[in-house]
Length: 314
Image 1: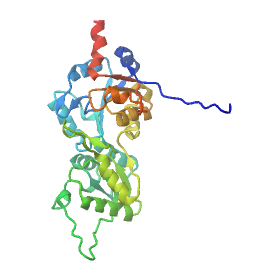
Image 2: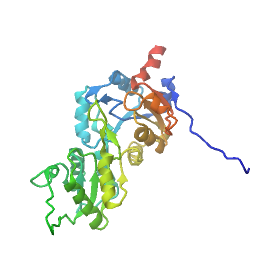
Image 3: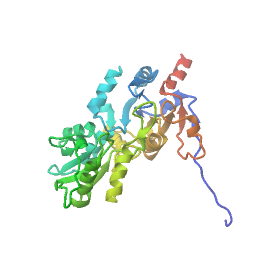
Image 4: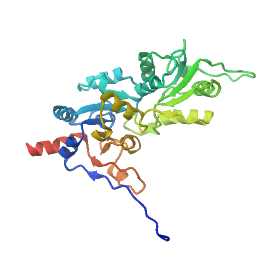
């Protein structure tokens, strides 16, 4: 009808009042790590008991993080240090996702990967059998310490066999890396530009927010005028990978996270149920702000709230 417009708005998130119903409705829980399982190097209260309870009910648990600085093996050690029994097969970091993506497209083994990032990406590429250069170390000197002397007529050489540039969070980011990655993407025919994630900020300390991996990715976007293929959250690559690997329907998955624009969007993009926990970066006022368009199915204070209804039925 003329003169009338209809708008649809997503229903507001509901507080998690009956955890048992949600638990019974899915077979797999995907958990973000920082802000959900731990904060920095400190375990969040009630996590071990919650994970044990979910396992006792036969639920598959998977842990997915956008942090690319560690490999799955390194994350396994962190879980162990915190007293949690989690296998490498249950851990999916964006460092692993970068290597898994290259395998999924049959990236040629005679081509090299230039890494702007840290050790986690290098370790996962090595395990996948790919040649790489860059990262914290390149040759005899760390890339993070390399300087460019802009003398008249200076031309920076780069490896013509680089077929992909992977960019992740990098505390040793510098102009040398920007130029090297830019040359590979712009001058090597068919060179891929892959980002582990585009997180604007990260939480290196509990005192303030710090520039995230998206700032490194943004620099390369600016110099190459190219958009990357993102393999971490909220891209669905890891969700698709998990669904195939474990043979599960996405409708049988609940994504649990503390970030709206990565964790919750990741779950929604993948067609999963979503639960926001307020133990990390998102507050209730942020969730309920008129400016926020991302609404999870449910929200609760922390994952140990799963235990409340169990205790009530004992």
